[in-house]
Length: 397
Ligand SMILES: Cc1ncc(COP(=O)(O)O)c(C=O)c1O
Image (cartoon, rainbow, N blue to C red; front, side, top):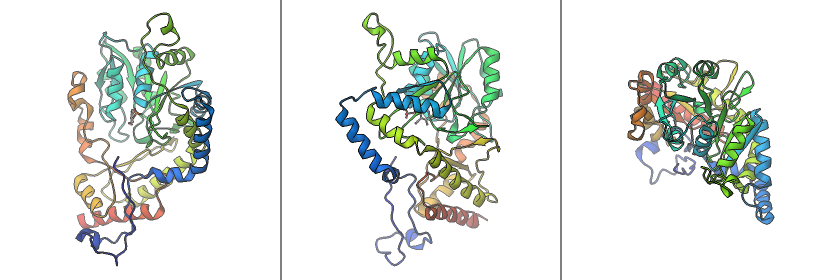
């Protein structure tokens, strides 16, 4: 993600500014994300942890990783966690460790077309064929009825994605999967701490995969991921697979890979985990400010039922004039992103599992816009985003 430098707008200091900047009534440039602010909050503890790990001489899969695995499993409310090198690997290894997918069998795995390409890539890496089912227009997550329609005799698993920080409809998806004997692996890369009736993402499927990529709600200072599950055998197989098949590799060739979390990342994640609930609370607070300000506009805002706790990894709105709104915000030096500009069933790599048309996904994909939202966004920045959006709506009237 490009780093955006924060500039304070000073109407007097207009030299070198474009016309649009000179006219701007807003006082800040709003970066989409600024992880250096997060670091500032934990700098003392992080420095101490980095020194401790460096001095300890134990750098991969040591005590910090073991402690983090215990703490992360406890946070998720599941029996255990296996830390790996990325979220993509976590999903691949969860599919393999569950026994759902085997190479060369043409095993189909149903997922959503509206997600990071890594979701489908992980299925391909495991040897499966991603098959895409349509999404619900309200939640933008996998539609259980569309999942059922996409099932064939080759279907082995379903990978619901808790998109943007809200849970997919897990109860109905689990019911469909149970009827057809399918494995369910949650892609929880965007949903650290998201819950329904107090039950957190990862407590619904046979296993779940998390990413600790730096921009995630719980992010490391590099790459990282974890498989979590209540199934001790699945966890043990994942532990073997992440180390090139070790210890069996010493005696016989077991399939596997090198996908290990290092001690520095685990130490940083342990520090950030202690703040995750507070950071998620701040995300929700900003989301509520946005949503109440946009209630009577043409923006379609994210809505959740009372029993759901959305963790707003991303605050994504829909607007029929998305590109014009984006250009308007850009003119006010407010960074936005699009998650995602392309649907996966339309990507050449995944075309073998494409089940077109997917009308809901195809209709909404051109309307999606992610506004800046993170725990260190200031009130002033939030106000600037709201004012700029309302200004666009006023002009559009
Ligand atoms: C929904 C989803 N799945 C999987 C991944 C892959 O995670 P990683 O980047 O850690 O491999 C990501 C992160 O980009 C994601 O957002």
